[in-house]
Length: 237
Ligand SMILES: C[S@@+](CC[C@H](N)C(=O)[O-])C[C@H]1O[C@@H](n2cnc3c(N)ncnc32)[C@H](O)[C@@H]1O
Figure 1 (cartoon, rainbow, N blue to C red):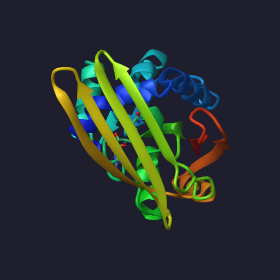
Figure 2: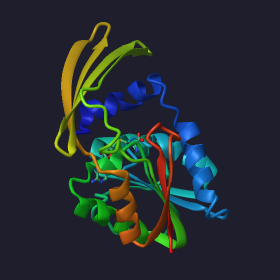
Figure 3: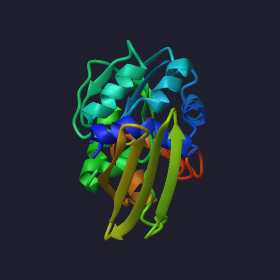
């Protein structure tokens, strides 16, 4: 999961699929600044290749990232020279710093495998926030909104590299199991194929909200924006 193969084509595929990191980052910054107008320091947890961090860096005085996958973190470091991108697991990390905003985008929180892990991650976010700080979480689909059997397919060509990505997601109890098949082809080099498998938890909206409260946040849910799955905005009390 999130190995070198995927890290190499991740940006190309998601940007070509129409994911607008700038608009998402602006929506997150606006949601956080409704509660902390002076927010200046941001940590993006599970920052991936740094798609949001690049834009957060223009919206906040100081930004840092945290990422479990080394190939994804390496891509983020290459995109953001000078920005700290820490290796780490959101279930248990300790940075010697506090932030006004902690973000966790694109359903990454769904990699928590149980309610205990979900609560643990939110406690970690709280520990890295200044008093009154804000955690903004772009959740995975809820148990009540997940579309069982969903197929998504894209073929993109950028700078001579063609990538096809076809995914199938199926419910297994309270987990969505997604198989992602990727073919990468370059003229003169050939084509190769890899499969990335993801198990992403289907927490309910109420379970997310309970986990925020248990970690010491007041929480609101903004439906829809910016990715379609809505945003949780937690303010540390
Ligand atoms: C869908 S990608 C999102 C990446 C990035 N936030 C974005 O919006 O493009 C999910 C990311 O979560 C990371 N991840 C998964 N489990 C994690 C964990 N326990 N701690 C930190 N990062 C994790 C993966 O390595 C991957 O980079």
